[in-house]
Amino acid sequence: MHSQILFPINMSKGVISKDEDYSQWFNDLVIKSDLAEYSPVRGCMIIKPYGYSIWEKIQATLDQMFKDTGHSNAYFPLLIPKSFFSKEASHVDGFAKECAVVTHYRLKNDGEGNIIVDEDAKLEEELIIRPTSETIIWNTYKGWIQSYRDLPILVNQWANVMRWEMRTRLFLRTSEFLWQEGHTAHATSEEAIAETEQMLNIYADFAENWMGLPVIKGRKTANERFAGALDTYCIEALMQDGKALQAGTSHFLGQNFAKAFDVKFTNKENFQDFVWATSWGVSTRLIGALIMAHSDDAGLVLPPKLAPIQVVVVPIYKHDEELDNIAAYVAGLTKELKAKGISVKFDKRDTHRPGAKFAEYELKGVPLRVAIGSRDMQNGTVELARRDTKTKETVNQEGLAQHIEGLLEEIQQNIYKKAFNFRAENTTEVDTYEEFKRMLDEQPGFLSAHWDGTPETEQRIKDETKATIRCIPLDNKQEEGKCILTGKPSSQRVLFARAY
RNA sequence: CGGGAUGUAGCGUAGCCCGGUAUCGCGCCACAUUUGGGAUGUGGAGGCCGCAGGUUCGAAUCCUGCCAUCCCGACCA
Image 1 (cartoon, protein in one colour):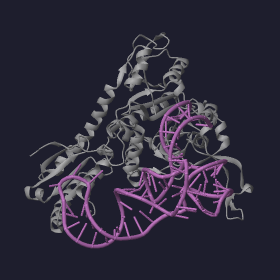
Image 2 (cartoon, chains in turn blue, red):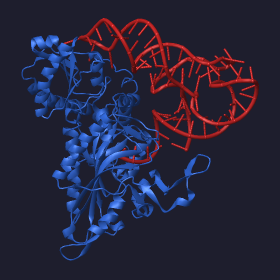
Image 3 (cartoon, rainbow, N blue to C red):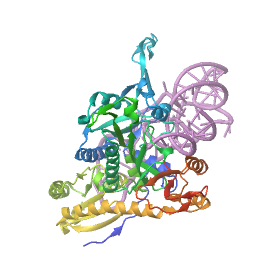
């Protein structure tokens, strides 16, 4: 049966080649594949139904993972009193420059048909649109915690936040974005650290097994740490242009927020102590990662586990009787696939020709396409096309659902493998600063190099090359070496890259 | 906030130097013929040329101011 043909899919209409202009390619793809569009508000995007359905899949999967590890969802207000931000010094330093502030609560008509802010309706205390919720949550936790018996508190919130970024990019950095933020409170430092690590592992598991995105688990250096954290863990991924993307973070906050908001509890020994905290989050940026890691000039390439449509069926027919015949068969196939939990779309629109539909679903990254015409109906076959490998084959209708199920699994793994190989090919150990700089220009990617451990050296390298330390990998082997910049002794390599 | 660019139909554009109510393509609508990789023909609809002033008999075009968006940088998930 299987005649495998590589179908040369052309560059999609209106999408520039990824090699020609990577940023433009990314923007074109987001817009043309119908994930999102620009809104009237600077830096804010409209997430369209197709894009949002990917987010819903991300949400549903992670939400279950959080619940399976004992977390519950709650919701805290969008607006935070300004005074809350002055309580944790490093936290406010980190976010002050990018906060949107609500100062008034009323508009009025100026008598000339213009709507203006009513200056009489000025707020006593300004409200900040949350850039993150640590402050309001810790202010709340103060009232929830008196004894060790009240701990741990394991709460997550799905929410929108706003950071007035100077420069925005669809999905990667928008002013408003959707995310989840977990905020937990613990009786001991050990327990909080264990929680921080557990959530990092959940993120890594999700990235690799659902998104098909290989990630490096590691810790941030002091320079790159979250504002207010003692330790920031992260997962770092490599995009197809050789730039790194932080895909998720998990912070060990120590007792910083407990001290700032005076959250004490009485422990088993009847002593008062401050509570230990963590926070962790991933955002709609994951969709950006998904696009940049896997897609090509013909459009998105979505991993089956997160694809809103896993299989699309395109009928090819000349007369209505033929369509009826095909539709009857497809109804049976659809039923079988749905029983296996596979989402199917039967596109029988007669307003578009098959070729146009093929192109459309390639652009949208649908993993598998089934085409059925009268010829197939006579032969008892269908044509199956894979988005990831761009191959198509003719297969028997018998056992098709089974075959599709297996293929989807194979595609999921293949997408991961491809990204994994790309990362391997673009991760280099370098031992001199010259080589470091040369690699950044000639073959950007992860650079594994020795560093003397000082913030000054890290900063200088950043200033001179735009590369930052993405993380100190968790599974790092200890090895004697010399810092690429200063030549001072170092005990391990760290991971550098230019990043989004 | 610095540098660059751009605003003309739903989208992409020509016209601007050298002033006379706007070009072409895609898309859209109708009908017909089509349908195994982005159909074809015929007919049709759609525009306060980003906004506000100014110059002029007359402004998409010249002048002034403003606004917005995108790209590159510094900042950040």
